[in-house]
Image (tube, rainbow, N blue to C red; front, side):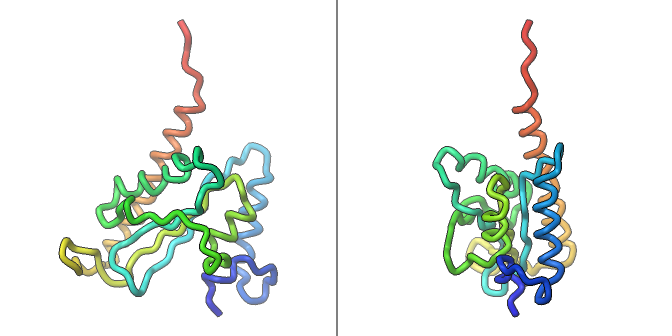
Length: 164
């Protein structure tokens, strides 16, 4: 059972935690005053170095700036993640992943997968330094700073400019 490919399943028996997350996210989007904007699925990757973000391909070209805001902010806070490695896609082979399934369930929410190597960073000519628990904590902190940047930016856009 590949837990990364069953997010679209409706049965609770195979993955009760995934089912609970899906139900909770849907409940929050229906709750008055609750504004869910982002879903982030985090994985370790076994065959690539460093890290990258998968993003659902936006339905309209004018949405690309909104969808790319999180990967850009994350790349600005984490040296091992590059915005250039972000993949905007709707690959049918990934239809059961959290990013794709939650994107269908929550069409107004930007959904992402953060993939980070089990092993090491990418260096200029190949393999970089090995990751440690501290490396992963630093990436988690970078996620928090990126989310804060997006929240501040969103709040600034929503705040009316005073007129004289």
